[in-house]
Length: 165
View 1 (tube, rainbow, N blue to C red):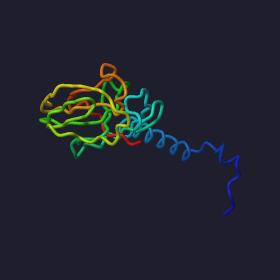
View 2 (view 1 turned 90 degrees about the vertical axis):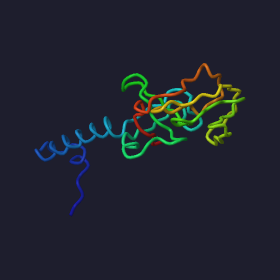
View 3 (view 1 turned 180 degrees about the vertical axis):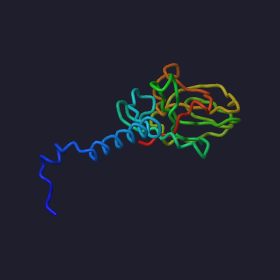
View 4 (view 1 turned 120 degrees about the horizontal axis):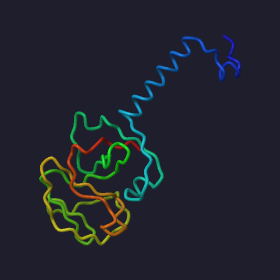
């Protein structure tokens, strides 16, 4: 079998079989990258150092098809339609109590280690109980003041899927 010349590889004849392959490949990519494996361009520093500003990741929509979100999972949240989504880490589940004291996370009254947080903070947040059907999410970058972060209780149905780096 002799190798194909480069010209034939880059400029194939437009046969019916070739056009069918292009059509099937296009439909497959459209379905996969719109409904199962959503590409994400990360903007912002709320999840640093885990996910860097202007980096790229994928949202795996089937992550929670047969399981529930767990503590310390990084999830993609629907913030405003399908165009604006947030990456956040789940730190507490329904029924848990959560508080920050001088930047240290307490879940159910116990100090919770957070190896993914690089910079310490001075966050103070009074204890609160997570409502049923909700989780508590926060970004990994705690280096800035609390008022600049989007975090808190969110309904579980706003979770789109897990994150694949």
